Length: 395
Image 1 (tube, rainbow, N blue to C red):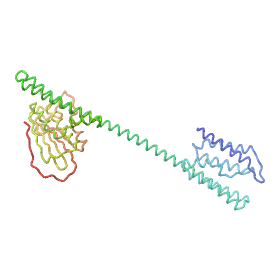
Image 2 (image 1 turned 90 degrees about the horizontal axis):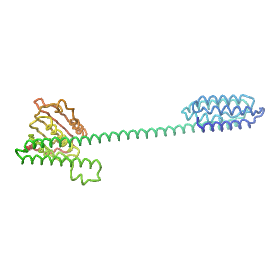
Image 3 (image 1 turned 90 degrees about the vertical axis):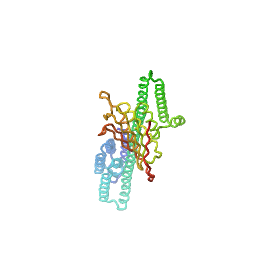
Image 4 (image 1 turned 45 degrees about the vertical axis):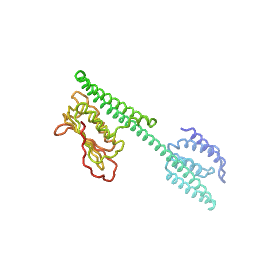
């Protein structure tokens, strides 16, 4: 129970006691004990007004009307009920308060009229009592609406905070996945290509020193490029504060796919590259996605497919760009050994394609081999002039 409620109940009890004790009415007696009793009853009832507002209102009305039925000086019935009426309205039951207060006014008016009070005096009293009744109900209703608005505002703020926390957590998760994909794609390709170069260099170190030096040089260049890509990724994650370092190692895109495939041929893989349609600059995210898909696919071919040749086709359309990587290997899903746990390469490629609104399919071909096919949407534009397919063979 709140201290404010106790103080309010004591103050109301004291006011009712004093008003009752000093009330004077011709032909009626006076009793201080009755005044204290009424004040005590009303004060005790007010202690429970928040938990049982309607019950307290009805019992308070009974107490006041019961007191007025005695031979003691009667008191106006509404003003002792102001707090119970206010509490009922604040609890959202203003209709009940209006019904109880209105009935009380009618009964009291009939009672006073029967006692021979002049109509004008009666009208004045009823008008004042009705104003008090309306004031109590309006005040309670207004406070209730304010509290409801405050609760709604608090709930909205809490919901927005929770939504922001969920969005922040989702953004952190997406950023972690993006970083993981970048690291996986760069390191996996580098390890595969460098590993092949070193293996060939080991075999040729005695018979062909010149070829060995070339192979080690290629491995070194691949390693340097990978370090540059990782440095660029870290700089971009930190923000635009060091744009110069990012410019030294620009983010790869579809224009570097040929150079990527050129490195793969150094490992003995025959690579055929086709570019079809009218080439044009692509959005940065789309270009990076195409490059990473090609990089991961070629890495899988080098590491697991047992393929001798791979065909890469890049098709520019008016509404999309497509990338197909088809090899002549064994065609096993994930192209991993039976005892090797599955990796995240295909999953990462699919996530990359989905992140830019595209699709990716991967699986064995009926005629043998394995195919990865990506379709990425492009911003709409007027149809470009038709060009004949252009084919470029690397080595």
